[in-house]
Image (tube, rainbow, N blue to C red; front, side, top):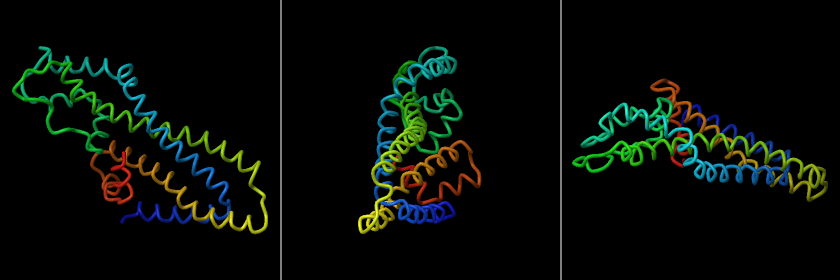
Length: 220
């Protein structure tokens, strides 16, 4: 456990208090909004990754591979050379999330530039695209859906009194902790991305030694 884990625990307790004050209805609506944003952004990013690669990344990668392998084909393992076709920022993210494979294809055969791209480079860059797009879509969808949830709560649940009101607050505190998992996980994803782009540094070491950040990185 390090400073990041301690902060995550403090944030979870803070969400408990906030949830108690806001009540079950508002917390539950926001929780559903966060979960929908999380799952939807991951699914949408996976669906969009191929299109993003084809339209915005493929041509640059193909051009770089043709520079690396001017003959159009190469014999044997080409992993070390093919890595040069991956943009530096994407390469750091791929290394951080351990996206590289150990071997491309049969090292005894000739491999064309197209085979190298589709077998090795494209799968790695597609995964990087999914990670980045998931974070961006999550932030956007969370904002939109939470605004919608707030409107529903204000109209139907905000000023309830009596036993129902007390139960609403108590259960709100419990669900506040659950709701806090979503932004905490999102924050860890962002820290992981920043650390992956920072290279070897004290900040990267702290992020990598964080139990929470490591768990989040394993999920994505």
